[in-house]
Length: 266
Image (cartoon, rainbow, N blue to C red; front, side, top):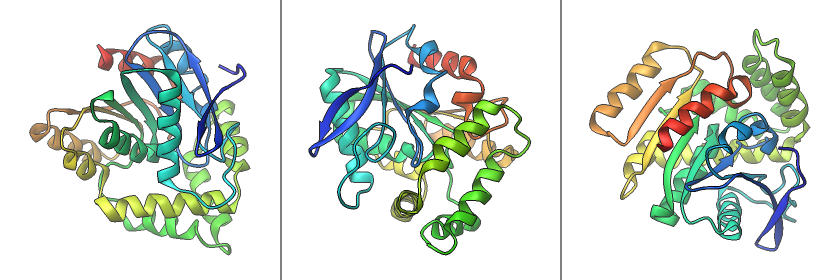
């Protein structure tokens, strides 16, 4: 990765993306809010040897253009669709980090069988705890957002000495200001308010696709057990807890993540 991006047009905006490898289903890599496609710089080379990889920058992120006014999940979904259409890919498997999973679910709802499989990376797929909801609210406060963001960064980087991950969080994610973090808090809160949890949202799809959740945190065994219990009645869902320490498995252990994704595609 690191090549000059290609561009698709979405509502008149240039949306940056990279296109690597060949084959279908193509993997569509989507970072979370206040992050960009550099999160996948180490993962994509492993995956592109197996199939085609499309890596997007959201509107207002990375090298994509920024809308003149406010925007939200609807515009992110439109941006992803514009990249899919520009690429000409007919079959897609999404790879989404954290709350980009909401975009993946909506893509399946709108594009149906074009979105064949979903890979979710380190997402809070159960109903959110109250402290998390309070953090989302805090991100929307001009008075408190920086303190809340620093608390999140410190939690994500606790005990981490890998400078690649530290720099990604501090420099890449830390480059976004109040407006984007507030927008993230608002949009993520709205999705949990609407559906209750990602698992409930997936269950409500008319025809749920095959879904794989790869996660590192939390290490609480009850979190894993609840997902395993869910698989008993929803065999389209599978879960794997990674032996990694951070919220960013695509950066921390790209080889293991790519092997699991490739196995899932097969």
